[in-house]
Image 1: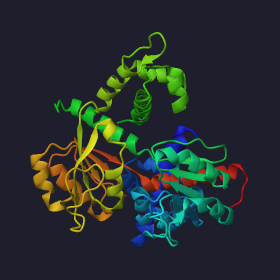
Image 2 (image 1 turned 90 degrees about the vertical axis):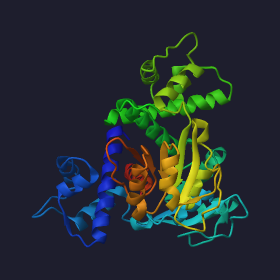
Image 3 (image 1 turned 30 degrees about the vertical axis):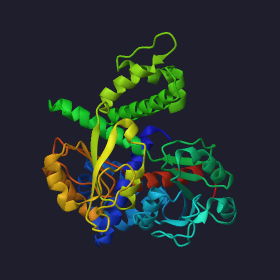
Length: 215
Length: 215
């Protein structure tokens, strides 16, 4: 995936999120200007992006339902996406109780942890209680899993990924601050929490220099 | 900040993280090839980036200590960065117990929540017990805070940001899925958790199509 398409997907994800939000409030149509203002890009960029989806403007703006349907196909959220979670520490629990995923058809079906004290507990949207990590291979053999979210210790990332890959999981969403190797055909998305903090720090430093502030 | 510099900072953050890791293992020097392999970019890109820092290669590769010192200046992590946290739910607790920040000189000095049941609790690296959100303005008036991490409900983001900005905070690290407005001179970094999931989903869908798999 080249860099531009990564940026393009980001914009599509923002359009999608905004449109879902507007639909919740009963809005039926939206103009490129409205989307552009909210997302802080130019209206012409919005029109270029959306014309690639094959959805045109008619009368006043775009039909929100049509746009959402096309974006869902493209983003792969038009079917229920079964997720599992491995690692049910604080971060894993935060993911389970975060209610922003199910509206995009992503749902946590099961969660696994090595800690016996967590096994049998339930959190947030999770239907089944937390299972032992030992049950993971059997679970993967008997269930269709689209995406596995990883919130384990850095030391365990690679070994857990190896189990997931062996079990046929094609999508890995990694929150641990170590980036595992995956074979071709497996897609991994690393969430760079430390990097985000370093970016913020850099931009603060830059802004301080610009404003001639001393710390 | 233009797009290229954003990508440049990401690479600097990756060099920095890798170098800190190598130093922990007692490594003194590193070649552009080694850094390039780990970060999955070309050695010539590494050399271009690092030459901008004014650190050259001598003998076998770069001196790790010199590189780290220059990167720390640039990334703004050469001084202790006082952070506070607002919102001590599961995600906030995960941030407090995550031990990957202090090695970059970032430390949570205090945490605030609206929930009285959390007030007085301590988590992870946090020295002082969780305070009431009502104490936030007074705290900001009496302490130097570089960065405020936000892990509050989407509905509360803007009002908390307004308190932080009024209290002189210049750096905001937002984990909530709503992106607040900030005045000029305040730097905000939004962590896009939903967007990361949508990106993964898109790339999975793309990979499925390429591999002619049906779901």
